[in-house]
Image (cartoon, rainbow, N blue to C red; front, side, top):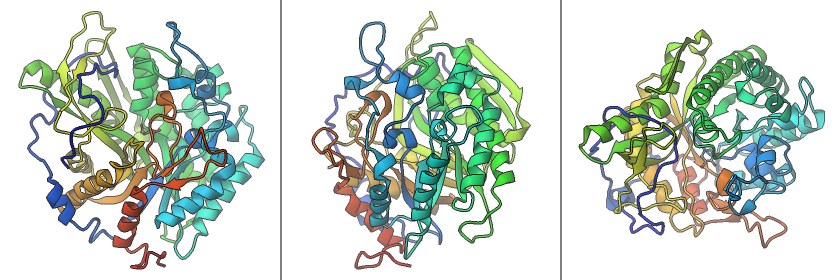
Amino acid sequence: MTRAPSRHTGAARVARGGLLLAGLAAGCGDPIRYSDAEIARHTMLAGAPGGFLLGVATSAHQIEGGNHNDWTEWEPGRYADGSPHVKGGATTARGPDSWNLWPKDVEAVRALGANVYRLGIEWSRLEPTEGAWDADAAARYRAMLTALVETRPHAIAPMLNLYHFTLPPWVVARGGWEWEGAPAAFAAFAARAAEAFGDRVDLWCTINEPNVYVTKGFLSAEWPPGVHDPARALRVFARLLHAHGLAAAAIRARDRVDADGDGLPARIGIAHNVIVFDAASASPLDALVAHVADRFYNAALPDALAGGHIHLALPRVAAIDEPAPELAGSLDWLGLNYYTRRTVRARLDRTGAGAPYELVPDPSRAHTDLGWEVYPEGLYRVLVRFARYGWPVIVTENGVADRAGDMRPGFIRAHVYALDRARAAGVDVRGYVYWSLIDNFEWSHGYDGRFGLYTIDFAGDPTLARRPTPAVATFRQLARNVGLLDAAGSAAP
Ligand code: IFM
């Protein structure tokens, strides 16, 4: 994909990732470059295996509105310099209002021809105080899940995500993920969710992007709890991994109902955010920075899950090395959330307080509204790489912030092309899930990052209608190609 120039400035920006030191090359000088012509010639998802999961994703806090959790405390706040925590002072007081408008979301998923919807449940709604269970909230989630599985002529399988960046206030009061009891508390929540929804759900996603949560919340201080402390960051990363392991065991113990008739009551995964880190030059220092960023951000999580041992390191700053036997065997599939590449130049900060690199954007590549490089070849690279762990992989997120909506069709085609190349190379890819179904709250960017296949006019339309962007047609073409829609565009059995 060679769309250029970008509508976003290509000026070098300092990464705010908070990674502190450096290492060897992480894929520097990759030679792949897809052409628009080869992508245009390609029939997307042709020959995808039966049961291929094609769908869309959202998360509870980003779409529901009206939550009460650590993010709703954070959203109205300001930094010491007076700037708001969230761009424009935006909040989730209403947001897309999916708590009330969820039937419109289900209808939008159905209209896409999708057979999977990755959605979240909000811990703070279901367990507003420790040990409580809000029956009304559970009933509403149950109604959503039922509407999905009862969609005809083919069901929409819910992929239920249990933790996606937000904590109930009572967990925060005990120290959030720094509380030693947090993994067990989360596993207890997972057990109740499995009991409550196991007859509707087979696909479980325990935790979304532990690496992003840790980086934003404990290194760059952009998200709650707004901390910059590498040692605490690693402790929380480890806690999230333990929490995943305990939750996976709890789900297996409690979800005994095979909802979709494939013989398996629960198939458990985790959604791992991956970024391709390439060195900006042949300098060993740039290579070192790219390598350390890659180890911490990309490799630490799957290494721990594969080996049952947590090794986390920000060299010369902080490290954790501890057994985690509950992780081994906890995964049935690995979810990969892929968006972009970072080409990095070392920027060593002797105080240890600053970012370890600056970005060197490739001006020949398009960049999204959030300034992220569009690099579909990276999806091929990460699929090939992470498949080596041996789990089937599902692209649990891939998407583009594109308010104008003109970039998204090409973005999807190019990334699905990369996915198909990976399948052709023997990678066991079981699904492609686009982020996101609808425009929603993009964390510290507020409503500025527009990822939706359906757009929402938050300021001007009190009905919050979900209006199709041009990429809906692109997605429906994917659904046609895998047989979920027929030639006339109607849902196929
Ligand atoms: O909006 C987020 C989502 O919450 C997690 N993955 C990345 C998306 C886009 O930034």
